[in-house]
Image (cartoon, rainbow, N blue to C red; front, side):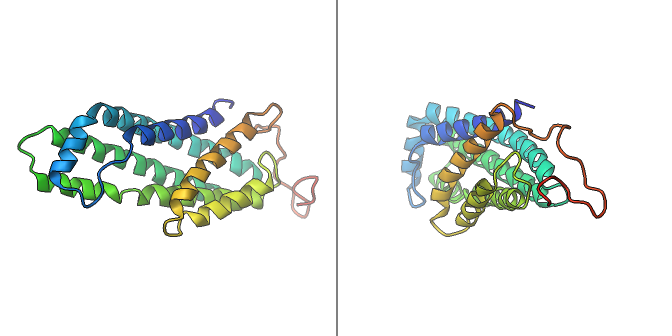
Length: 222
């Protein structure tokens, strides 16, 4: 399934462009007047940004499903691929909630009947709405990292699993999660590039089947 890795690349690129377009939004202590002025001035950029984030979440769901499939071929008896999939779904949900709140801010700023207090409340809520995204990506990385590290090293190498595990832990450390989020994007790109390389198994039926009782699972003796 050669299109599988492309969904991960699309998710990372679209999310990065989305956040770049949205730029430095008003802080949690900004007044209603400042919030209204910002979203009235940058309504087009915010609209395009939230749409790209919406589509990024869609591609992330497909990538999470594909990643679960790849991990299951390496860790056949484990439940960790399901954990990685659940984390990807949670992160995509965070993308969609964030996009929906941005849309509310754009529309509310253009309505004279919406008071400054309501705009302040929406803006304050949106300022800290990154937690589901950080947590979801962290869970995906932890599940994928442990699954890769205990797998047979095909198609994803063990070192990539340990990198994912470290990044997953980083996502749950205060203030360090934002650094981990950028590095997580690079990790997804690395995974996609490896899986796009010619000759990768990627979970095709030609991979080794389940081991018979008392016999090693593959030629590595695992």
